Length: 423
RNA sequence: GAGGGUGUGGCGAAGUGGUCAACGCGCCUGACUGUGGCUCAGGUAAUCGCGGGUUCAAAUCCCGUCACUCUCCCCA
Image (tube, rainbow, N blue to C red):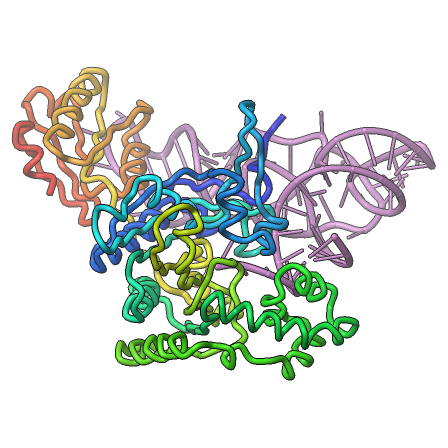
């Protein structure tokens, strides 16, 4: 029996030409390093939380009415009868950890980032996996619009650093829970008589999560929605002022955005600012998104604390980079590959290899015992800068032949000077 | 949840009823007894997704099944 990876998952392999970019571990290292670096610049520190959390945490914080929780979570019960859920997004777990560890007592503002897998039980397709990876950041303890702008700038800065263009930032505000309650009331009143004309999906949403009716992509719904009440009419003054300030900061930072009054994201915990970043080359598919969630920390048992953050789908970043034709960075190889000729040289190479490595030289040696040609090919495959050839002649004189793999120039180097010659 | 498409060596991919299932890449061997990325020659590797049926004969036709993939929905 041969096993395939489970549906919607894939293996990430050492440099695998001919395979999908998402399967290339070197690209993941590059992506992750890039994200870590920009987070460091913005003053964010890494947090790592479990990939599963209690069923209730995930379901309550993301929202029972959301698609993600209603039909896409991996839920399971342990032998100890604990109901758990594989995390479908990053924020809930980070908030839980923030409260569990009372990080709010350490400093007034916490800036956290994370990178890791998330799980959603969906039919896989291009750019959509059951296990996908997100990089995200959360800014906790700051309620001002500067925080919103910074978080959006961080997300955009990450894409820019990678060389991604053709992006759109969609921006909206969903106001406070109070104003939203009023609005949803009005929306439902408006929608009720129209339900027979609306899609089945929006009928479901009407019952479970009326706000998301706005987000429908069905033509019949879109036509009807033109007459729907507008959320902005229900916003209180403070919410409007906050949104105006966020927009103005973005403009100041030179970050273009599209205001989209119908943007409603898939999590219930959002308040005020919500945003989504779309990629033109992926047909405006979302590359990432986020928003403010001022009630969430309180909802998971912490002190009332404002927060804002985002999550970015890394598979989609790779797809978009590929689609855009951005050149992926070259991976760096070994400094040296040792090629022993004969048994005596092989024995000598084992200790030479150990010595070079202890001196900090990235190196490897041939383990096949095959011909010189094959050894040099391996040096080539490993992108070694130098091949170090050691045969009986060299051994007798205590030297090695160092071959520059690019120029083919060779020189004889005493073994004790080897590490200096390999730079 | 709905609808398409595809399953042939490690990868890509011909073949649509009839001798030992092309070819390309990779890998291996040699030309080149201690010198790679080129070339040439040879070689390795496939019970044609699985099960059943039709037929003298099936990768090819029929039924079933599984897997993968794409689109819509939704999302990252």
